[in-house]
Length: 104
Image (cartoon, rainbow, N blue to C red):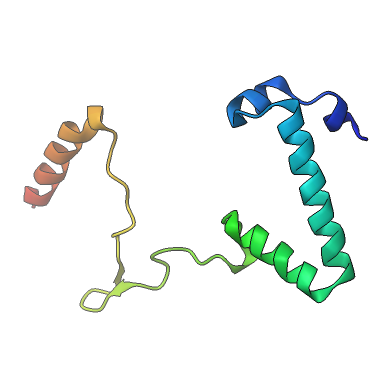
């Protein structure tokens, strides 16, 4: 048994909605899955599927959105990936944008 098994973080348990017993059961299943992955190809496949189900991706394989899109007429990068300004600044931003478009 490790420290997490004996004294789990109460805030973590609260956020997960788990009890100490739930955490212990999860750790037992996870450790069993890891051990099975070390022993068999089927176990490795199950571990890979479990990790994929968490939505985890290798950061080295991630592509940046909008990195290759370009405007063919002007050679500018596409700005479609921009986020909207916060609501309290949206009106000011729109006024600025419209005013800037009218400037010579």
